[in-house]
Length: 127
Image (cartoon, rainbow, N blue to C red; front, side, top):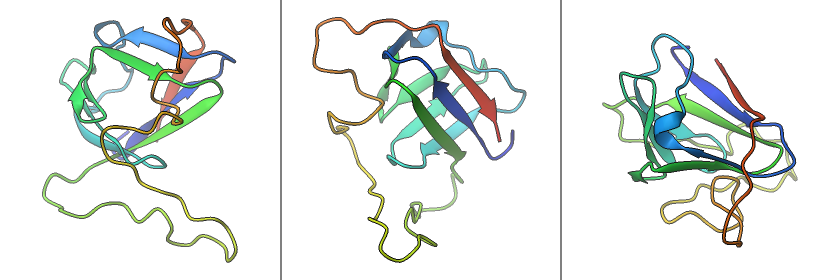
């Protein structure tokens, strides 16, 4: 939708897709987005393909097992970042934003093995 989309990997293994083979469904997805929990940026082009992933040119899109990545459209005129901790209940550990390079434990980097398994259980929905 106009505000963002969710990328889901419902498999128990890593999803590893060539970026040029991943076309998102939806009408007006072109533009910059920020992932809500991990804080990394992506860019979707006019053909609904991911051209940047985590601040780098997207060659492969990797999503961890049983992971939902929530992408919110970035306002190109705003110079602020998301406040991930606004409204969290007292006592809940704070969420963290990461900048490039991404941490090795995040669901958008490949695990420490030479060839991640491919998965066809990746889906998404627009919000």
